[in-house]
Length: 119
Image (cartoon, rainbow, N blue to C red):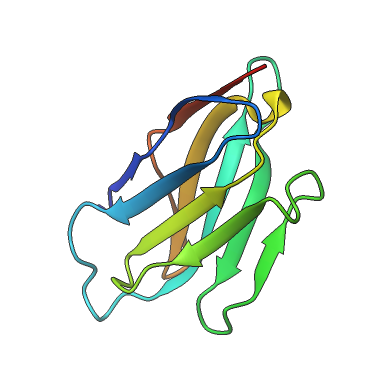
């Protein structure tokens, strides 16, 4: 069973920055392939939405329109790690952020980390 551990959430003023991190709790065996990594978010009463994703084979990234130009998804040098650099944060970015890995065609989720942006 693969466990993902997130960190980096917190309270920040509008216009500020935060960097979220997500890594597997243990090293991934070389027989398992991380196909893609992504960050989602879910605000109270809302559906979970894709924020950003990266395909590991090509490095192709995708972003929600609402975060383009402000957020960057990065894969760490430790290949089981992914980051979400969030700049120019807005109040509407307030949400619980979840990381997601697709490993050998299976979906794995982190426990979520709260990001709160104050005005």
